[in-house]
Length: 620
Image (cartoon, rainbow, N blue to C red; front, side, top):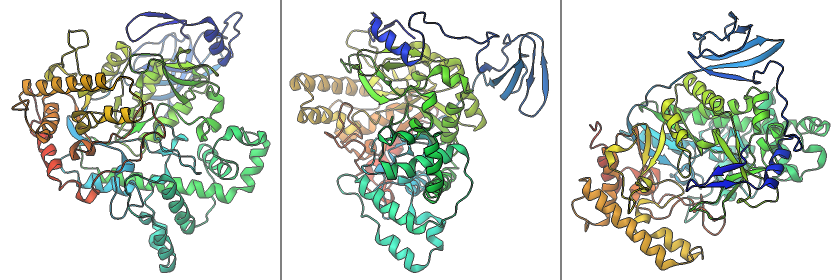
């Protein structure tokens, strides 16, 4: 844990001693002695080592995954195979992960960043679904990769949590994305039942997506189709489905349930599992359907050089399923966020509970492994949101503002090694979101391990040079995923029209609108000059549509492994998916695409963007 840190301007900031004590108390450390109990052997609770490294363990025995036994005299032999093994030494059994030193290079490809809820088709029920994802993958001619927003589980009660970055669980999928009419149960139902199901379908989205209406309709339809089977469930799924059934009875935040139900191991929960067995089985069945449809979407992308990359959010809803089921390895009274910086002068509180690093290691990192495996089960890659969180997280003690926190460090070698091992086993690519204030060694280590960093056109500037000029395109990092924007930033057209300033001004979030408009106008001029200099735009006076195409064309001159655009950028839509700093003031995560999926690839602007992205497949 940090008692001081460097801020965004590399200035030393001392952490208030009261904050230090509060965080130590959350870690159950004696604040009088700050003593942490260590193991008898001096070895950690879990050993994670790169293949080829000789790790000192003392005399012992390694039991490999395949049952082979390997004697250890002093150090682990460097030729141990990749995988999860067990070290026996000093009377202890210690989980041992041998991880790849480096993942294979990522093949160069262009593709799409999707907000899945925003897709819609003639068959959609009010928002995008897994069927739309499969259709998009089949129709995305020439694309090699699709990055999808987090599709992790919601709390299945109203009102529905709209942000995909505050899921109820990171280990299970979101049934809100189920395509009801793509289930075997719908096809096997008799005509009368199918008619009742179809009668529940909400119409296509209008100006905004109504999550509550969509969930109410899908839940009613799925209840009509449920076959009613009850079967044995593995423990993690059993806990998740139990939470869902309890939430339907007692509300969406387990911290407000009757005291006897607030821990999954309690006698009251054991009794509830018996009483609610049919409803628990129903929620487990929804997860089966999600797995089937996620698998079908991945199959539809089978011809792509990379495939479907799913997004992993940094945390979970503190009142949701994982925070209930995994509370023994979380710090439930703490939230994570970011310290004050130029972007947020008061700091940020994301209201997500963090892993306890000590408890995580004591469990052999099993909860973290389950999260990674759940994402990779039906994916060709994983994007890790706020990847710096594998190194450290900004902990905010209870009752404190986000400015009064400190960094708690994690065993990054273990966290990153486990991520690499699971990616290797799933033949998956890894992308780390390293935007914002991130220590340089985070990005360097990602590249060393064969993982991609993030490169966003808006931010590719030399901030140490006068005027902060754009970095020459061919000097961009090759081991990166390049894009024009992100879900938290203006769309391409929105940037050119200063839509983000207009919206924030209308919400009273801008203290000096004239200054903001001037700043954005200067950024627009800088970008256009950069496009002209790079030879993708003929004149700074070019029409907006030509500028938008040039913003895509310039990406192809980077050596980045992945080049991504988004449907809103290609369609010249101006509303960005999410406006940071707002909750209900702006329609975050509720904005549908301006055209349905079946018409998307025939749009003239989209065709021009695709042509621009395929114009230079092998830059020097």
